[in-house]
Image 1 (tube, rainbow, N blue to C red):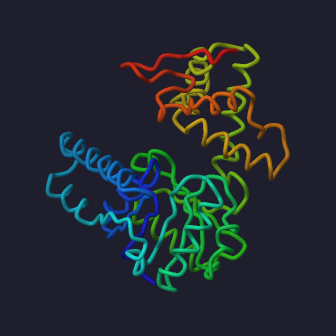
Image 2: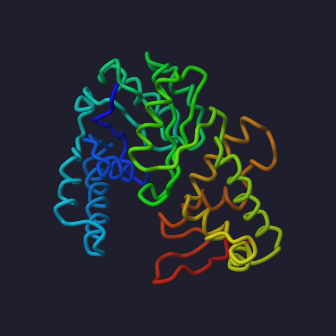
Length: 294
């Protein structure tokens, strides 16, 4: 089945980006959120980013208008009924995801594919909550979706080759670099990245260097575009802790365990760039390192 219409459940950090790149690739996109305010905020982000692209001469205003014209915001899940592919991009809470899939499974046409954008939760747990586990796969995008070129296409134990093929074709149309991976906690990127980020936090706890020094060392010494503490802020400290908890539950290895500092910062509401404060304070023109009380 050719995919022509995409549904995106969630228009937040990841969902608005998935919506935008799908519309840019020529798909008609239905997108929903939990409230009108959240939906409006997501569409406003898309509009702003397309406006910047016009200002920089990357696209014409007419092209931006056409992209926005392919996006159909709604609060009614019934508008997803004729979608060919539905992608879930809500918060990393399994119970909320399962409830969403149960509703969508009753609404969306039987031949449609379902995909989760989860960064760590088992795909099979969500697939099993639907009547179409063979048509269920993982499509893990990276933040910011409009910039990051990678798309992990995840096969659970029930995912059919046809569903994987559909996911790869969708990624190719988005001009993403796709990689196939299995349904194991963290998939490829987070399986390797999360222990590195957690080690950066442990290094700070152990006093091997300051926030600025740890980040500068990994940029200059390892050629990374940003250091582990800056990257943790961009990922979201709450998201990082959620992923680490899932991975620790599956593997029971210390390298996946969330350090005390990470847990305390999340408890304090310091989630990183999205909340305005993490290892850095983002309230000014330039991020400033903030000692987390070590």
